[in-house]
Length: 222
Ligand SMILES: C[S@@+](CC[C@H](N)C(=O)[O-])C[C@H]1O[C@@H](n2cnc3c(N)ncnc32)[C@H](O)[C@@H]1O
Image (tube, rainbow, N blue to C red; front, side):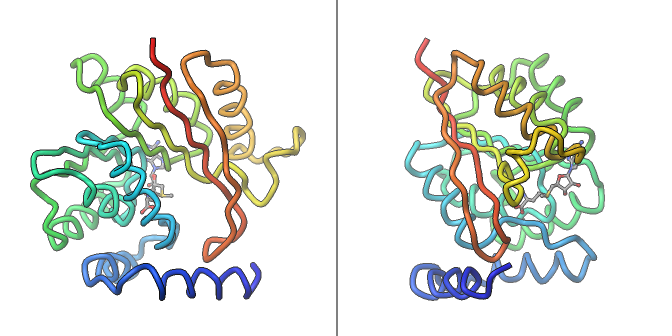
């Protein structure tokens, strides 16, 4: 990873993102709890918060909680009566996330559900939950098309869907890459390209988290 990318992320954070005890504390608690440092960066988290604000999100769905760092950014954009559901496989990650959300004063509007996200999503669809105004997908990449499918059932026209880590240091362009995360990401692009209900783009990013990118889609009016 380039030192310059890191320096620019640090410059942007220094100028535009205030030190924040809840977010800094969440990262410290994640490290203390042995969670991998694979959360979004501060600049990306801020972007998620701004996007949630821009679309006036009142209900947000997240797939892939880890310690709740991105959850905190997203939940801060919610109004007091807003709601965020975040799905996590690992009970330990979920426990750390719940504690981080409580310390951030967001426990009242956030619910961390544990289990395989495909199963949690199927249960949500069966229960008629939604529609969510925004969905952030950031879990196991081989399941991305299943998550997109579920997201389409849990959203409405105008909802925003964001999928993280879709560039993978450029590996996404390699049809022969055997990495299941790359295969899953390429399948996601194929699914989005073939999906008439979505308008989408993807943006490459560099910074603290290396060279990657996110996919941004809006559910079209019917
Ligand atoms: C990249 S991390 C999420 C980072 C988080 N969104 C953030 O930025 O703070 C991915 C998370 O997805 C979880 N995960 C992996 N496979 C999953 C699955 N099948 N169902 C639900 N969660 C899963 C992992 O345990 C991990 O905590």
